[in-house]
Length: 521
Image (cartoon, rainbow, N blue to C red; front, side, top):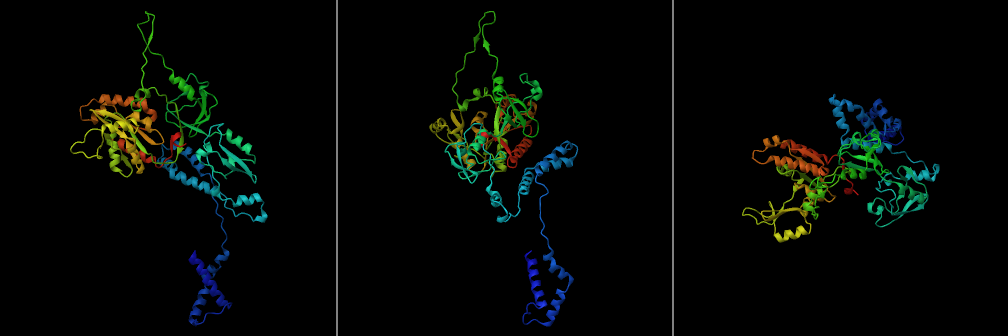
């Protein structure tokens, strides 16, 4: 465009020379002038010289700004063709890719904005001028997580018919979330414009409550529920689905809907399901019915210890877990759970060897003396028993145990070292440690490596070991800790199991994730 403009300028200048509007520069030869005259009188050059005067301003507009809705409709239309048509399957895969969805979302945002030149100040009123001068970047849409009736901890003032935040109380809900600041102007609440009354705004915000999303840890079919008031109104779901709770006024029956489509239905509340699952018949031991006496089992008194909590985990009730949607991110830890001999260590070592820049692991601590060929910090960190016992009492170990008179354990600090190096720390720990790991501090992705059928396991192991014990232990772990698992892989083939594990971990960096709500707020 710069060269074209330069050409227009030169031709216009020589056209003035030729018309006699300005004198020719001194020193021009006659043959040069004749050559120049031939060029200027050429029809092509004349058309080119007149082009800037005939160019009309073209106004570009987006065809539509609801492409995400259009893609959703298309996916619904071709859903039935995916099994019969390979092209429909490929199209569905492309349309559901996160990058393509983000591109459409960015397009819709840009297309929905107005880029008209603001009217002159003398032709518009004050409100129109203010709106025209307001930059798009100055408007922010935020989501405040609160419960109905919970105080905000913020006061407002009226400034030129705008409601402005005057004060944020320290320790209040707004202060804790850090999304609003003193001087911010509140324009809308839940899509409705706010008036000029601070009291009305306070009442509106006080009654608002955000949507609640939960992940159930049990299967539910209303057709088999004798307590539901209307089976036709029930909503069936599977363990691990994400449900949106839309109404919790009834203490026994919540109204919920599936995250993707579907009508609203009734599901058992947390309170009702806890009562249902907690009700178990009493176990009695006695000398028999003829004796006429029943003697209850003697209660077992135990002190709760994190490292020995398997007895308590058997009685832990898991109903619903409140979750929140997060954009793609790298988990701090990858936790492999499974029975001994299912291949956890092989999968961990393969990941670390193939991608040492992405994955790391911890080096255990031990109180035993190093052997002649062992170096400290290579396979173990060697330390004194008294020091390890002190650290255990101080809670510095994720897990620990004693074998052959020596202490072994995994230190929490060693996990943080790997994470601080911007790598995912891979852990193959006992399932009892999941209660400590399933927090925002470690943000784990928990994968259960399940044992295959007994015959398959025998074919995979050449050594003569008790594989029936491995299969039984795997089933017990799955029953007791399934509510912690993000993924279950049956290791009937080590290569296939590794490919499944690697694909699942890679997907965390490209797709949105539903995580426990206490990781976010």
